[in-house]
Amino acid sequence: MTITRIFGAAGIALLCSTGLGCAAMTEPDVRAYLHEQNAYGEIKKGELQKAESELRLALRDTPREPTILNNMAYIEYRQGHYQKAIGLLEQARVLRSDDNDEPYIMNEARILIAHHNYRRALALLSLIKARHVWPKDYQKIMAEALLRNGRSAEALAILLTKHDLPIEKSQLSNR
Amino acid sequence: MTLKGARDFLCAVFVWTAVWAPGTALAAPLGFDAAGDSSGGMSFPMLYSNDSAMAKDFQALAPPFLPWGPNSSGPFFTGTAEVEPIGSWYIEPFAYDYLTPGASSLYMPMRLAIGLGHNLELDTYLPLEQNWVGPPLSPSGTSASHFGVGNTHFEIKWELTSDGNVYLPLATPAVALAFDFWIPSGQYQNLNPQDYGADQLGNGTYNEAVMLLVRKHVKPFIFYFQLGDIVENPSTVGAGYSFNNGIASNSLANFHMVDGNLLYYAGAFEHIINTEWGAGYLLELYGESQSGQNLFFGPANAPPFSFLWWAPEVEVTWPHTQKFAATWGAGVALPVYQSNYPRTVTPMGTVTFYINGPFGYRGM
View 1: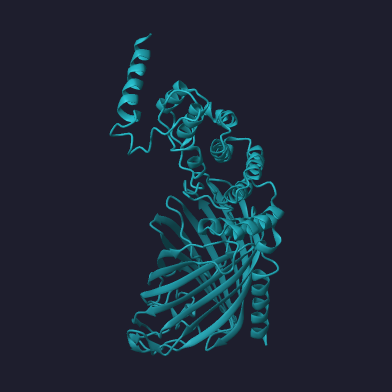
View 2: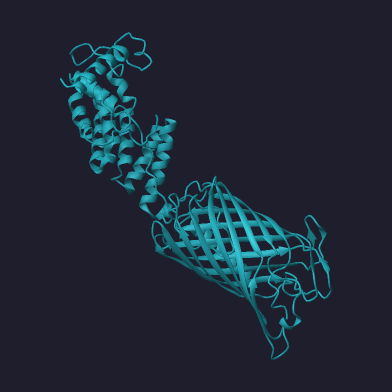
């Protein structure tokens, strides 16, 4: 009788943990994190539609998470929606006022240059120039932006500048 | 122009001619070409072949890591599959008071755990014991007590996998193998009949064991599981020696004792109510079963036994800082089932002092 009661209690605890009570069901941050993880996996597989629906679910719980907005921008851009992508990246950048805004600035600058909006790309990239550490590929993109704005001497100078190397940002994918 | 300025200028000219100038040997491997400059200015080597190539580097970002790994006291009988990080260690004194009719055995192993790196951890347990025996195990009006060191226990834990996702029940759990050794440092021979067995502090056998440990986080719950097989080597014991079922005793001098194979099983369910304070409760199951056959040494002549206990436990962590934390736990193990084993109630308590190295912060 006692054994039955104990195993019954353990069974109920197990059911609760895998279902109703666990954070994956009850905590918005966790829910969003799991959807975002799924979305990232789908992006890596090239399944942009699935990734988009996962990101929309993530946005419901954490509408102010910059990486979600960045990845939404990625999908919009790949689907040919340039303006939407720019808007999402602007939002992501504004939500990160510290140096963590660099991935969003770099991504926005990339697509601005790709769409010949050189002046705006240069203005964005200039936000990073004064910082102690430059992100990976910054010199290359900044030089590109300077060249496109007709400032070739500055482009050469920035390529020759010795600057602190960034700590590898593990969150950047190599897509 | 200063000397430094002149040097920089010459350097720039050198780089221009040697590296970026179109058509030079180094230009192509570096990925530069002399594609048209759409800015309309002078002809200049481009870093990208054209504007749209730039967009190919648009990067999707992995979600920022969302950790959950509360530093809690944990279960009393079930081990943890995760190993200590290198540079971290902790001391954990336990107290188990095994209460049976007419006897109390306060067993206090002092555990020292050290992270060795390479997914390995070394644990040592040096137990102190305070035994008390009274009626009905001793004549009416008499009792005896004895204090000393019990059997020393060493464990090497090897973590094979870590928890794949602390929020999903079906993600890979943390799995470890543990290799355990016991040394019979506790007194088991030359027992004084006046002590009614209270002076026996060990069972006199060298033991070896292999344990499988599994742990899975599913925030805010943690599940533990442990299954092990303990081989007890034969030993020579004297009159008055109590076998490890705690009931039968030997009456022969120089008796060559062979214990049966000992199975160890335990599991626990933990609910963390407050992550920062490591506050929560546990429900734990624990049992042992000794057969009539030793895995390596043939038929056993020590009595077989088995038991199963369950234990409600509570826990809290205080203080909790980056370098130091202390976790506190208390509970009571209650008998569910026993065969050839005394009905035992075991109040328990523990405190763990964690000294965290650079990789050992807990409580995320």
